[in-house]
Amino acid sequence: MSQLTTYRHLQMLLVLLTIIGMSFALFFLQRYMGFSPCPLCIFQRIGLMVMGGFALIAALWHPKSTLIKLLLWLGSLAGIVWATGVAARHVWLQHLPADQVPSCGPGLDYWIDTLPMQQVLNEVLAGSGECALVEWRFLGLSIPEQSLIFFSALLIVHVLIFWRILRPISPTLHTR
Image 1 (spheres, one colour):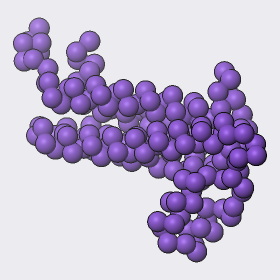
Image 2 (image 1 turned 135 degrees about the vertical axis):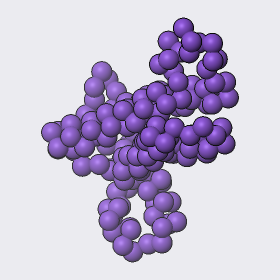
Image 3 (image 1 turned 90 degrees about the vertical axis):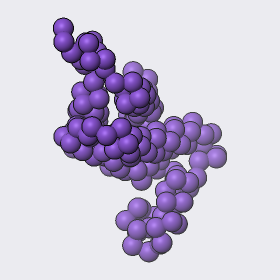
């Protein structure tokens, strides 16, 4: 069991889960089901890709330095904390009463073309009516609720990685 929870294997698990999550979003939800991602969905994907990018670097490079491992872990953690926070905001918007849902505004492309980036972030995170729309459910959960569960599981993997960084495998386990 300890062989499966090595630093490198956990990083590869994050990369694999990133590929699975992005494939589900792009190929199943977007291509097969025909859903267009709302701005909050796009921001969740960005956080997942940031996490996956740092995990890929850590898995391929496999640094020996604890400091480098911690820096890569922090980059990966920042991505998944961002995605989790945006997903939680998205779930909150979907559970608002209909009269409290923000109105739909212009699309993300328009905001990026016309507004400073700080204001784009503020507008996206404020949410809009399109983000509150529940288009599909699986096992009674909306897409953002499923994402929140998935991202929470990835946070647990990050806790395991942090534990592995601080407490490497005992050399006696490798001799067996």
